[in-house]
Amino acid sequence: MILGLLFFLFIFLIPIAGECLSLYQQGEQALAMGNLAKAKHIFYKIPPFVNKQKNPDFLKARLLLARLYYNQKKYNLAQKECLTILKYFPNHKETKSLLHEIQNLNQPVIIQFFKDTYKYLPALLKGTLMTLILVLFTMLVSPFGGLLIALGRISRFYPLSSLCWCIIWLFRGTPLLLQLFFIYYGLPALGITLKPLTAAFLGLGLNYSAYLAEIIRAGIQSIDAGQMEAALALGMTYSQAMRRIIIPQTYKRIIPPIANEFIALIKDTALVSTIAMVELMRSADQLFNTYFDVKILILAGLIYLILTSIFTLIFEKVERKVGAYEQK
Amino acid sequence: MNKNNSPLLELKNIHKKFGKVIAIKNVNLKLYSGEKLCIIGPSGSGKSTLLRTINFLETIDQGQIFFQGKEVGYVYKKGKRILDKAKNISTLRAEIGMVFQHFHLFPHMTVLENVMEGPRTVQKKSKDEAKQIALDMLSKVGLLNKKDVYPVCLSGGQKQRVAIARALAMKPKLMLFDEPTSALDPELVGEVFEAIKKLAEEGMTMIIVTHQMGFAKEMADRVIFMENGEIIAQAQSKEFFSSSNMPKRIQSFLNKILE
Ligand SMILES: Nc1ncnc2c1ncn2[C@@H]1O[C@H](COP(=O)(O)OP(=O)(O)O)[C@@H](O)[C@H]1O
Ligand SMILES: [Mg+2]
Image (cartoon, rainbow over all chains, first blue to last red):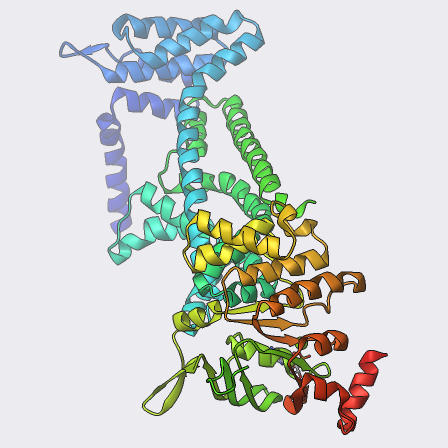
């Protein structure tokens, strides 16, 4: 009985639902079922003006058709659609660039490659800038964070050293992605809502401080105990001895592993794309979802390679400099 | 030596244990200004530990240390003995120079910077003043020409002379030498002894742990023989090395060393 009623309702509702859909949505439905001819038929019924106003559905429908034709390599049809759109929407950027692309098809591949690169680069470079900001921030902050945690870790004050041990244990023992999720999506449940950038700074800063802390601690403990004794015997305080004698001697030993971490950092910043940060990875992702062009991914990869290479070179220079006193 | 004055350094009844190992047992010692004291004794007898308790690189379990007539290192609160503030202990250390067996020069600083470091960082002297002091000290140990090199470029003997200059730059009232020549090749021992002797002639008060009996004989006003953390003999240098009724144990030690 109830089933019968439901069936009746169902039959009855389908045409109503159909009528509620706009022409554009109906066309999309037809496309989803793979019926291009029907979709085109429906799309062509959409008028360019409604109540003397430009109709955005007209634009959307024709642009979709143009893209489809383009992907099917029916360039003449695609061009026709673009020109139609531009008749009513003469300033529409995406249409213009699509038309441009079609008209450029006859050009040599290499020129086309450069043109595409030129098209994608501004967005990618903007993302790169954000990636650089994240990298530089973490590179500046984490050595100090790491030093503080390392000093706490080797402190003889038990509560402090166990606290620092816990911080290291926690941030090195869980995925950075999880930490970022927790800070951005989890903390609001505890009443703390952070902006994406703040969350990214916090996550990267804490994670990398914890990693560097272990490197710095190992560096400090690798210095001959006689150095601390000689400094104390001169009358230095513990902090003077650390600052003037012990820590400067660790540079040579800790810079190579820290450089390693920093190279990993450049790539790890891609993880913050998951917490609504638009950096290089996210920019590439967005572009790719619009153009489905593999060149975008290659370009993003090249930019990452350039960044890691530059930083590798810088670190090698620094390494050579700080170890200089060991050479006769 | 005017023994009517109060001693520069006095150790009263010092005890020190490392876990169950007794390193220092019931040590009493008075050292007067200008005096040169040599400590000899077999390895592990507590010589280094004793030296290190004087500037509190080691804490003591029992006893009292007086420097310039004042008890140092510990304060008493409600009858309880507690370690003095780190700052006061640093101040004490600044007045006592120490030279280690393995030099412990700061490898990331040039020779000049090594010697300037104390006056600069501890005494907060101006750069020019610290540099002047450092140059004076380096010329005293005959290493002015090495002032701009890093320690890695020096021979063992030169390193130890820089270490002496570094300690002297603090204008200490007392110098402690812990086997200053034991890590050196024999042909480099002489130059370090010369530097220490020069210092002695200028009237520096010093305690030297050494296995070089010739040096002890020549330098020391007084000699202490330690074994198992205890002072088992002490005498004026001349008596010590000539006495016919020297305990057997010391004699056999000296014979072994002099071989
Ligand atoms: N930091 C330490 N921890 C444990 N035992 C120590 C320490 N320093 C010295 N000792 C022990 O104390 C005793 C005295 O050592 P030390 O003063 O170095 O002797 P010496 O300098 O006469 O060779 C030795 O048995 C040594 O093993
Ligand atoms: Mg010793």
